[in-house]
Image (cartoon, rainbow, N blue to C red; front, side, top):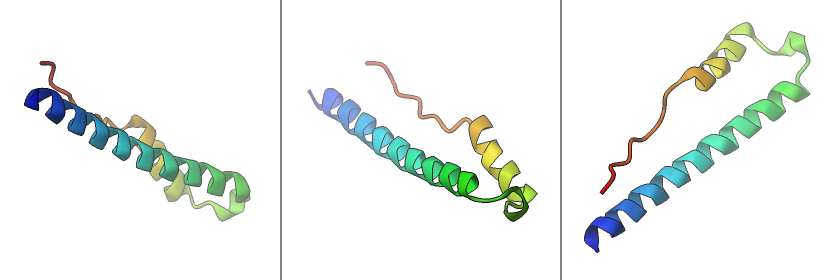
Length: 63
C-alpha cells in the first residue's frame, strides 16, 4: 500500500509540474502572438524553441 501511495504522490507531483510548464508555454505563445516581429528579440525566440527540444521528463519506476 505504501508503494502505491508513493507512486500516486510522485504522479501527482509530476502532473503539477506539467501543469505549471503548460501555463508558462501558453503565456509565451500568447506573448509571441501579440508581439510584432520587430518586438521579439531573436535570442528570446531561440530560447523558447529550446524548450521544445528539452528532455524534461521524469522516469517513473514500475512496481
